[in-house]
Length: 150
Image (cartoon, rainbow, N blue to C red; front, side, top):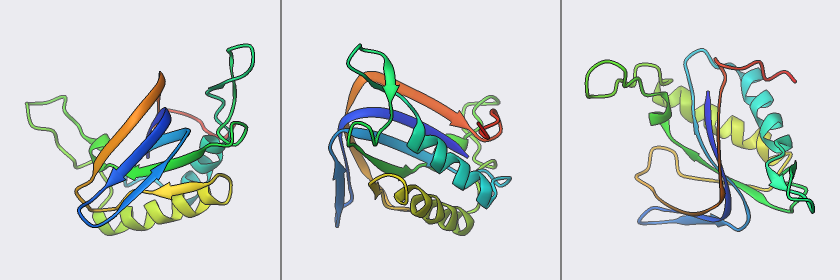
């Protein structure tokens, strides 16, 4: 599982038929690896809800998204699992198959929504994403790189 987390002042995701947006909060692109299991989804949801990347009164990143009364917009993005080291065309063999990733996306969103106001992008759709990055602050977390039990 890979999360690309952006602190934003606002974010909007649209398709030709629908749209979803948030004000201040986190825009999070998410992808799933075949080794990801349900407990990883729960741990990542908890980590994301507690991640202190908003400034406090002293200008230090000490506040989480709930502390600033923000929300999260999660956007499915299998290309985060791309392997572009060999050749010029990325391989997506490290991405979880579509139907399994779809299930993981909704499970992850459900876990997250229990902790933080959450909006969802549109799985399998051609989306347009607009955002105003705040900072900018961008953080990448991968399940296979970190022990997220803390």
